[in-house]
Image (cartoon, rainbow, N blue to C red; front, side, top):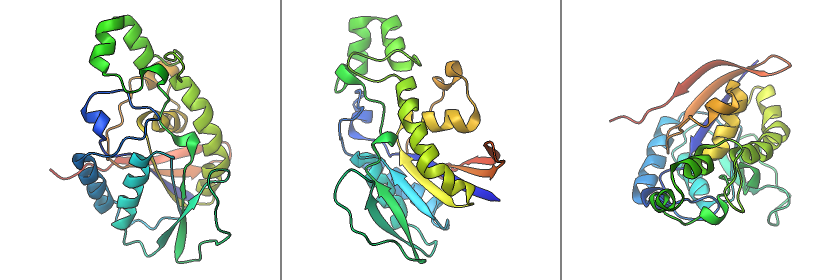
Length: 232
């Protein structure tokens, strides 16, 4: 049985443009980010989704909503907050609907702690290349009062294993709209990437990454991976 998993990093945000550490600060998409989300939606328009997931941050939620607005797969999304966030109705999606789970904190961006809001070039000038690189690209070196990529992996993977992996094992098509570092965490698991190599992985904004997967019993084996580039 095969399944489809689609990962998309949110469209470009205002602080991406301003070269600032964003983390959990809830900044909006910029105009380019909205266009990226719309283009991604057109690329994914004919997929028939069984479930979708996103974090509690608006740049990922808005990207998901725009992508799903373009969808022609025959099902309507019903937006459902994950357990333990905000009150939710008992209604369950029917056969011509699918759940789009919002506010999954486990899928949020890496928390950059005291660096959040700071310009990256100014942090580099103040602390030097070595410290800057350890904070930004090191696997297990968190910034002050923040998370390392290792910490992000430690919260994202258990959620993936508990909530998303069972759907893929049933052959479903799942969309995740999330963030650069939380998607690195999932990619590390899917592609068995080493601690040293995962920090080199760049995930572009607004570009869908489509995996076709096979459940082998022990793992999800990648049959095919496609990066759906926007037309020029």
